Amino acid sequence: MKDIMKILRLSIIAALLLASAVLFPSCKSGEKVRMGMVKDIEHFPKIKDYDVEFDCVSPKRTFNIDEPAILVFRLTNISDKKLIIYEWRMIDDYNIKLFVAPWQEGMPTPEQDKWICLEPVIKKPLRRMTLELVHNTSTIVEKTIDFKKDVIKKDINGPQTFIVYAELYLESFPLKSRPATITINP
Image (tube, rainbow, N blue to C red; front, side, top):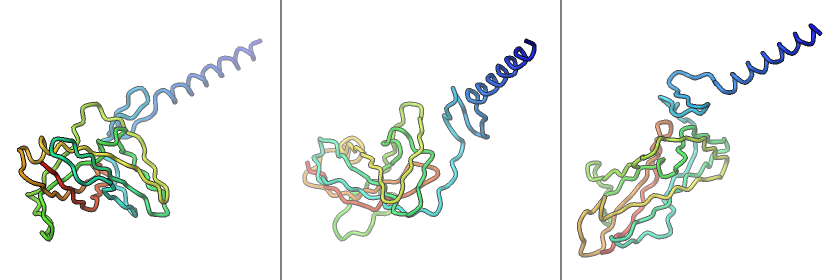
């Protein structure tokens, strides 16, 4: 009987130790843990040795000034290695910021002070997930621009052309897309 009680006590202690290991994971320096989920890490390591394409793939490139311009960006891993982004935000829109500048055919790329940066307005606490892209897989992110409110801020008389590019809004992977042109009509 004593042996059974001893085995029972040892199994209860082992179960408690296992439960505490699952419920209270160890933290790395800079991590904040709430209920077992990592909420924030002070710094994410830089991603190196990647081969990706990052482009605006929107089929529609002409918009009216009174309607939102919805641009679609695609990030594709063309490397044979798996691309893992640990700091990807669960709301895809939060992962990209846009740069917009007036432009005309034949003009050089605008100077840096001519670009308008449209960063995402993050209203909720950030929830992150791991984004894994194997060879030839992609993720799509849609971005909406209100040209009348955020870029032009006035009425226009005729069509205006803009050059736009996206940049990943990530510490570990600061990648820029290739520029694309869009037209805004009055």
